[in-house]
Amino acid sequence: MTKDQLSQDQLSHEQAVQQNPLPGHLQAQPVQAAPRPPLQPSMSTVRLHGAHDLRLHHEAVPAHVPGEVFLKVQAVSVCGSDMHYYHEGGIGPAVIRRPMTPGHEFAATVMDGSGLPYGFVDGTLVAVDPAQHCGQCEQCHAGYPNLCPNVHFLGSPGVDGGLAQYISVRPSSLYAVPAGFSPALTALLEPLGVAVHALDITKLRPMSGVVVLGAGPIGLMTMQVAHVCGAAHVRVVEPRAARRAQALALGADSVHEDISEILELTGGRGEDYVLEATTSPDAPEQAAQVARIGGRITLVGIPDGDHFQMSAANARRKALIIKLSRRMGHVYPRAIELVRSGRVNIESIATHHYDMNGAVQAFKDAYDAPDGFLKAVIYPNGQSENTQPNGIPGVLGPTM
Ligand SMILES: [Zn+2]
Ligand SMILES: [Zn+2]
Image (cartoon, rainbow, N blue to C red; front, side, top):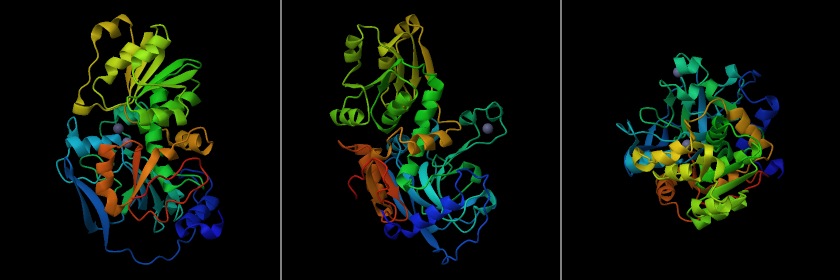
């Protein structure tokens, strides 16, 4: 692609990266912000009013918040957890009580010189860590910010997320991405971070056997990160044929409709590690059955109905080590490097693309998840400037 073909925003991003080559906010390179036409007084946003009640709104553009960076949202990917809010109106005690703007997986560009004190020049494309932890509590002090009980998580009940044209975010949550990263790819760094964290807490020993339950976006990313972490092989269990095919295409060593195939393959032993990435309340039971004696299970998925089951005797007799994964810690730099180095392919997981007017349809499609669908990406400021092929493996799927 020549520079002539690049959109204005991509050009400004490229220039921004050249001027500020290191990700993060330590490389202050103040430059004069380019003159910009005044902001439109209102913006499009989307609010979830309750289960299956998502509406497009036009609201005042948010004010600049001192100490925060003002962002133009470029891409928002729809997550399985968004589907829980969409379908059930909440996740456990986190219930929607007032109309909420979803969106915790998003990419944005820096505006209005608001990032200059933190090293982000205008036009820099950033990934946004949606978890704004308090930094003061016992868990934060102990180095587990993902467990902070006081966290403000963008796009959860009480905290509006990124599915809007503009948003103001703390600078410590922003990560500049390398040139060539598309907004969709940048949004997907958040779920990739979930996969990285899952492998962190799994403590995978090299050349071990791994099972991943579920070939949705998180399962497909977890499978790829498990390979990077030195798994001897990664077997993926997924009931849907289309998703098994996607898992094979992204590097699964074998795919299975049911765990019984793996038990047969291993002579009843099972595998060393099982990473569960489904919404099924029965998956933890399957994980316990397919884990070897003394094996290790990591539960990543959020079960439908907020309950899961695992029979005690099998898990107890095998003395399984069971770990529940909660969001992620400080993983963005590694997630970025996984993509930059080509060690994982996540862009092909973004299969469906929508403008803001298609946001409601995007959630419907994500809920129905027809064959071939993995992840919806919504472009609050339009997709024309944001869906250029960028040379990274992966294809842009059907556009709505
Ligand atoms: Zn998510
Ligand atoms: Zn805290």
